[in-house]
Amino acid sequence: MAKISIDVDEIKKNLKVQALTAKAQFKVFAKKAQKDLEAHQVYKKVETALEKLKSKGFAQELIKNPKVQEITKRLVAASEQLEKTIAKNASTILEEVKSRVNKPAAKAKAKKAAPKAREDKEA
Image (cartoon, rainbow, N blue to C red; front, side, top):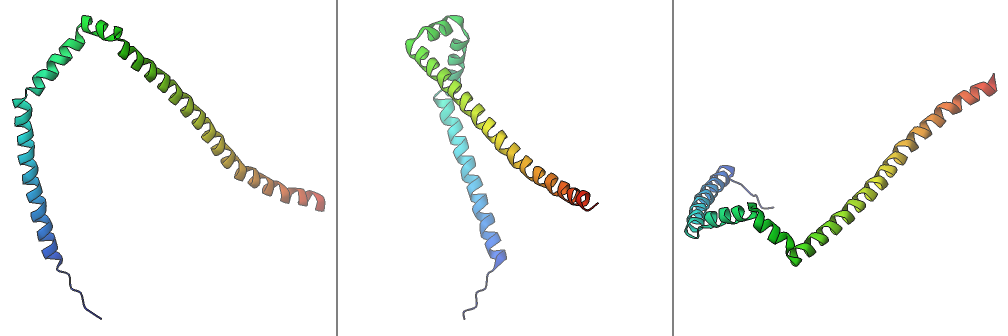
């Protein structure tokens, strides 16, 4: 049979080196992403879009859009269906839990009542 020896300290050292390398690579990637976002003025574009959304004119225009109205109707219908399904499942689960909880309790009461009935018969 072959004997296997593991150098735990060497494994720890290698893992630590890999973790530090990954950390350094992640920092480089984060800095590069930050520069890309700034170069493409993503933050400025997002702020502009938010300002437009806040203005009443754009919001009214958006609400009147037929595609937006259709999406809204679908979302409302889906949320109502989801709510019904959740309520149905919750009540089913609740009934199941009640039946499982009450079943052992009923058996325990029957077992406690049975000896008293025997004692009554004996007396």
